[in-house]
Image (cartoon, rainbow, N blue to C red; front, side):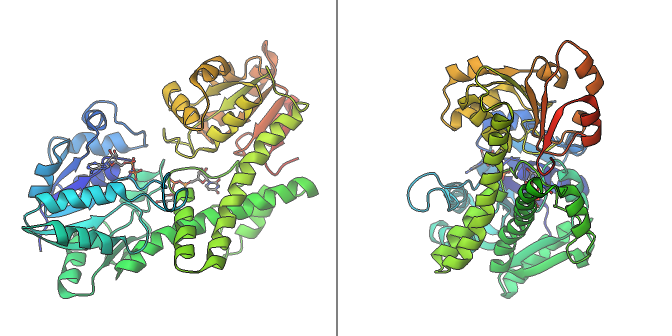
Length: 460
Ligand code: UDX
Ligand code: ADP
């Protein structure tokens, strides 16, 4: 089966970059990315793309208008496509059964119903969004029950890209995972999709599995990654008590080839749209299938992450003599990691919330996050806009944020923060006394020499 037209429902952090990469590697395939959010589509068609991702402009702009199209015409795109990627959000449910744990599948269901309504002839439906295991069964049921003229093969093809490195991850992935039905038609669909990736990814890195293994593997991959961070973060607390240095411990254990060096960086806590959501999902699924011990095991990874964030806010308040009321605290970084404008579940949101509630004024600088986004995130946690207007100062540089601050908290590991000239900060008219380095960005020795009372997670 030859694929000549692809449509992707959902122009978000996953759908946009993934489709741009397919379009750039397969000039003979027409790729249409559709979304019901007209503002987002307009941004994809403009000079300033809606998401910041290094290298993304370079793949989107040359293909746009040639074989890569962004539009709100969802029905038309579905009708003409051979393959339909479903890349809509699957946030944690906030209401009803499974609230706070289960994935909200309303967008997935909405997309499936739309496909059923519009599709004519054979279509391959690809689940790109991260979803609970066995969602493909629900998709198939909806498609088959509601479609008059379409026939469907549902594949699971989870995306493993990380934000900030999406373009590199897409062009040179560790693996591509495709799950499908064991039937002849199912396997034909798997091979059709594999042939698209096969244009630039060696066949041995394209794994074929059954649907359920593929769906579950995505949740498990994220759970294992998050678990490593919670593990090292738990050790950071022990290091603070024992004068061990968590970076030295991480280095020492990471050199064991069975453990490996990656994802062992102690931090103020992991953020992002995936880890917490997928862990919660795993906990919910384990409970649902009558495995409370498994659920408790993975819940502990989330609990440790919550505790790490709390511990960081508490440490700031305690170090500043148990009160931050009326004090200015510089906040460097608001995005959940460097090289992205995404703030979903960023530890910075929770640290700022805690500090604002303690009465501090927070002077925030992030190279890519807007004031509007900061306000949206904090309002979502229940803070009033009037209070935010009083207690948040948005800054345009690290120096401005540190000016007249009692302390500075580094919450994202942006490279430019490493370049800040502390001597200049120290010699100028302002001198923050404390540096709270949740991301281990600033060199500890240099900071001590300059005279900060220094604190970083895991370092005394
Ligand atoms: C993650 C997975 O890495 C990716 O494979 C999946 O497709 C989506 O979820 P992402 O959330 O974009 O990607 O970024 P990631 O680099 O995994 O970082 C997640 C969070 O963990 C960030 O807040 C980061 O700062 C934190 N982190 C990461 C640590 O605190 N320590 C580390 O050692 C690594
Ligand atoms: P991710 O980070 O997984 O890519 P996002 O939330 O950034 O998730 O993107 C998901 C996108 O899917 C949003 O832009 C949303 O408007 C879009 N979307 C959700 N449901 C539909 C639908 N039925 N049709 C088209 N687009 C949809």
